[in-house]
Every structure is written in structure tokens, then in C-alpha cells.
Length: 351
Image (cartoon, rainbow, N blue to C red):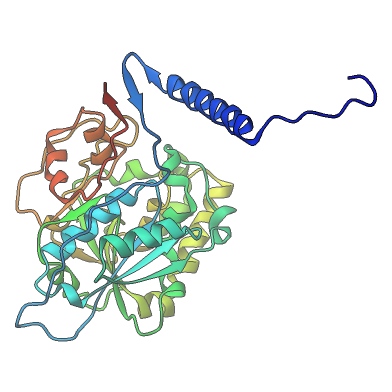
């Protein structure tokens, strides 16, 4: 531009036209990037959305006695947790008496909001489990999911729960209850610290390595006991006895041994077995129709065990919500589906 000539700016109207043109071009590019083979892909939200559950009310025979249930909260298993909570409330005579105590490893406001919006009337509290309490004590197992610190939170229930909670039912997130939970709550512990379903027909020796069984000092652990496998995903715990008997320290002591010697392969279960196998109150097998998730490596389909059922448990690698979503469910997964509150978003629609 020659010196002395005045500057000429585009009119406001022309500037606006340029801006609209740029925005239109950007939007067209974005839309084109999301169109493949005639399918428009909508944005996928970061967090699952659940339908609001109906309100469940107490029957006429209910008193004010609380039933305390503890579960962990993990965003990866949240869909299972929501189904489990619904099943418990739906089959309970006194659902308003049930109080949930959730444990999480980190503060996730979306999880809290989801529970409140899905179960507006639910009695629940959430407690922070400090992962550092176990992080240095965990040994690698055969499946990564078993190595997560939150999987060990059940060991610390007596340290986390408030003092007025004298007894608690601990449940895994991959279960549904099809009976009144009060029947499990009222099991007679007969002075024991723990009640759980036992499986004495299982080969107990397989839960520990040859190194354990060949060590003369270590295998004395079970002297005077008749140890049987039990599943720690369904337990009734006397919280006071657990605290007074220093069972947490006993379990931790075996975890420390495992760090020095490879005496077992499976996460948090074996140290429980070392401390309590053969010294707990056995619960009817109807309260743990277990193994529905298959084995720990491949998660193959399994059929129901014969007998009455009060609780279905997808222990193992396969989880019903994942298999249903993949459209390759096992037949038992259809027993879980009626309790699924997940509201899938439309990820794509055909033009």
C-alpha cells in the first residue's frame, strides 16, 4: 500500500459473512469425518447413564432394624453394582431397612451422582479406601482384575465402617439376589467371625503352590482344621470380632509371606483361606450360585448348579453385561439382564 493512502477495512456485514462461511466449513468437515458408509456417529458420553429405579417400600411387618451391606464402587463394574442393588431392593420385604456402605478408591463425582439419580430413595454412604494401604502388599496374580487395590478393601471393613455397624454383608459387584436378603443377614454365626458358602468338594490343594505344600512350616497352618474353599464375594462378617481378633493383620501377614515366596496365585482369596478356612460358619450354597463368569482365564460359559438359588454370582472372567453387549451371551446371562438399569445411548444411526 502506498504511503499516505487511507486503510480500508471490510464492512461489519462482510466480516460476519466471512465468519459464517468459516463456521459452516468447519461444521461440514466435522460432520464428514463422522460419516462413514452412510452412518452418522454421535458423540459418546464419558459415563454410562442409568434409568431411575422404582421406589421400594417396606411391608407392614417391618421394624426399624438396619441391614448393612458393603460393596465396592468401581466405574468399570458400576453397571454390575447397579443391577445388584436393584435386585436386593426388589426382593426385600423391608427395602427401606437396607443401608449400603460403598467403598471407592478415588473420588468420582459422576458415580455419586449416578447412584443418587438412579436410586433417589436409597440409604447409602460412601467411604474412601486408601489404595496405598495395600499397594505395596499386593503380589501379581493370574488375572489383572484381581490385583486392583479395591479388591482388597474387604480386609479393612472393620477400620472403615462406623462403630455402630456391628455386622455387615459383603457382596461382589457381579451378583444378583433373587431372595430376601434378610435371610442371609440373620444367619447364626455361632460365635464365628465370618459366614460364607463353603465348597469342601473342591480340591483345596490347588489354591496354593507346590512351594507352600512342600514347606513343612507353612503347611502346618491348617493343623487342627478341616479347611475348605470358600468364596469371599459373599460373606457375613462380625465387624467387632474381626477388629478385636486383629484379622486384618493376620491376612496382611500372609500377604507379606507371598511377597517373599510364591505360595498362591489368586489375588485376595488365598490369604483369607489361610486365616479362616475351616474356622467359619458355613452358609447354604443357595446363597452363592457361583462360577457363572467361567474360569479366570477364558471365562467360558457355565450352566447353573442343581438346587435352589437365592444369589447368582458371575465370579470368573466373564461378566454378563460385557457378554450381552457383545451379542455373545451365555444362557445364564439372561438371568442378569432383567436387573440391568443401563440406558444405552445410540452410538450410531443409519441415514
